[in-house]
Image 1 (cartoon, one colour):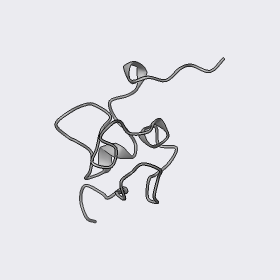
Image 2 (tube, rainbow, N blue to C red):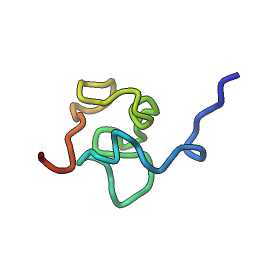
Image 3 (tube, rainbow, N blue to C red):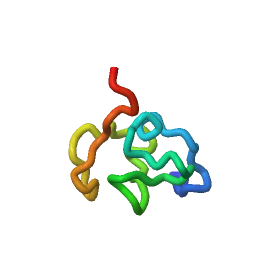
Image 4 (cartoon, rainbow, N blue to C red):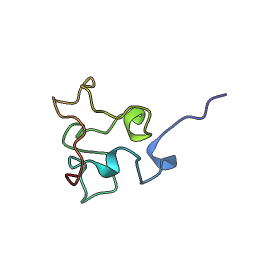
Length: 68
């Protein structure tokens, strides 16, 4: 049986979103400019790097916090 995922059992850190300049740093919530109503679990959990368009992302994709 698959465990139901909800915000109460997610990590505050995301392997993708925590390094993106669009993540709302003022809150620990799973929101950003691309997904103001909640970042999809697939992206938050690192299963999609969001470097290509994703349904509902308002044309905003991953951009690193700092330029290398």
